[in-house]
Length: 445
Image 1 (cartoon, rainbow, N blue to C red):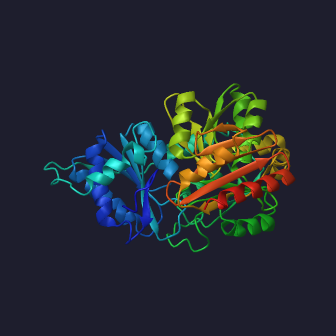
Image 2 (cartoon, rainbow, N blue to C red):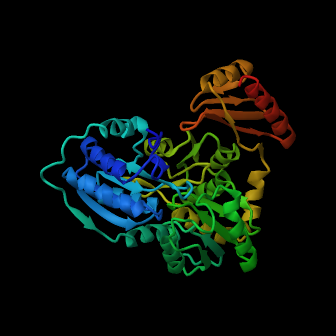
Image 3 (cartoon, rainbow, N blue to C red):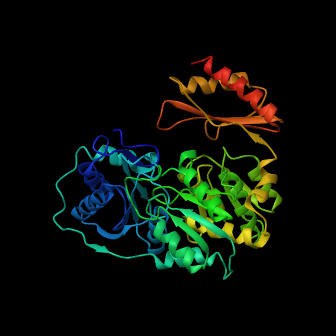
């Protein structure tokens, strides 16, 4: 079925996913997952509220009790699901996808993602042969949950005052109100744009990784002479930081700065990062006295590695950031990352571009390359043969390392493509090796 993917359920509304399918998914989840209480929320997309109601009906028809927290960000739902001990969380969202997409993310009792291998596969099978609904219906209650989440985010400021001028672009998603509350509680000098939730996403696509999604904030930063900008995605779990010049900063460099700030008070702590990050990130973590923990790409792998290592922080190149709340659980929070970086900027009293410059100068990373291929495994085998004299690891796809350059080639979980990331000690080396690798791959297609 087209809507079921490696880490979530997502597709074009009316084609891959609709209200009827959402209802069946909720019923199947209720039967499969060992949870008596489910917490649910929804993003700002046009049909998300209707899907929210269908999930409520599906769960209660199966005798499950439901707490609904309404329109919210994914980090907000996750935080309260774990904090209150709900056995499962369901967020109705299609994250950063274009407006016509809708979907669901499911979280287990420990806060981990219910991926295809961890249960979505069984849900997909169950929806085709569901038995009659339960005779005894479950209960539903709506709760307004926000204050404790704001308190958690504010706690990272440790009572500090900030003179950093900021621009926040909520992208007409579901996280604008949270960032507004954080900014006001911290008495920030801020400009919040695209705050109103609107599933049409009228100002730009809800994907901050797109250069077109950052044009508006770049102009606002220059107009307001701001020190920092942030752009969110549709459900508020992905964040991209923009410096005082209006230039986006890669998340692995931002994560190096956040790790530095966290390790200042927690020496020796573990920091989890994905394997397509710049090598500058693990080197900086180690230099700051931390333990750098390599992970596969993706929420479920980052989160599981954080739990396994009691990590302070986890980060993905795509803009996802995760934090340890206490010894019991972890949560994803773009807003928390925002406050930690504010704290660092205030302490350093230097522009963000200057703080990032030494990290950016260490190595040169070629642009990500996505190539459509018919046989992904054949490509990986060819690369292993062609680069057999290198240090080779297979944590996620295949990673090749030489003293002066290194790269990773990963097959996509949802598309017939492979993704290539290469970094080197110099621009000249990176471009030369990138072309050589590209030629190697395209010759096999």
